[in-house]
Length: 295
View: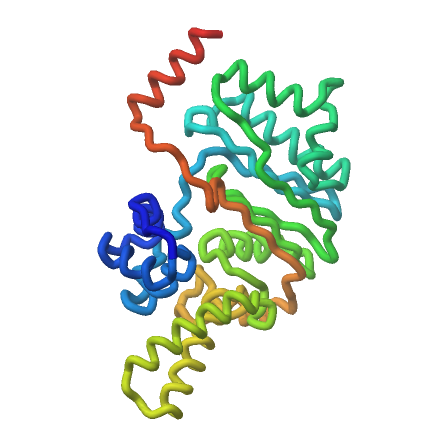
């Protein structure tokens, strides 16, 4: 096992909010593997560990384009929130989502080769970088064709959701999209949840059950109960609808009530999984002012 460095400890602490010493112990036990160490902390400290693992840090916007049975969603990143609100940056983002629909391709390499008003996207991107003074990147894109009807929702410009609903019902479609933005499910149904996620939860639940001192048959039920709870929490159909009056109606109940189903959904959150350098407000103002003067 290699040395457990301060950088590794800090990285784990940033993901979990766990105490420094607990992070170091977990890394030692995990032979330096951060993902395994995070799992160990979840067993020891409960749900607190990992609560900031999805903390959103990078800046940018989500842009969505829908044209009949075709739709796209893109994430364009920049360095500061100032640039994320810049009109030229926003227009660039909208143009990229439109190109994805028109070309029916979500390959970043292919997008960069397309043209907007006779100028290649990559050339426009570099020109925008030079003008604004910040790095700008097309991080990801998705293109889909619907079996039913597309509905979308953007929360500000930071969260974007696309939903393919089996029927035409704008109110229902918007409600489902808004729910997904709020609750961020991992899959439509429990059967669609990634087996790797289930395996991780099962290992954590098994470790917790083994520490309870209960008989094996009780521990088995504890593990099964934890997994069932997890599956309901991360599957769209199993989640309680955010606008439910009695806090009991699930998305599945809501869809059945309307004789509808969800064929597909996608959610993008700006900066998901990325890390932003720490700058305070004054620094951002100074940097933006300096960049504008330079131009």
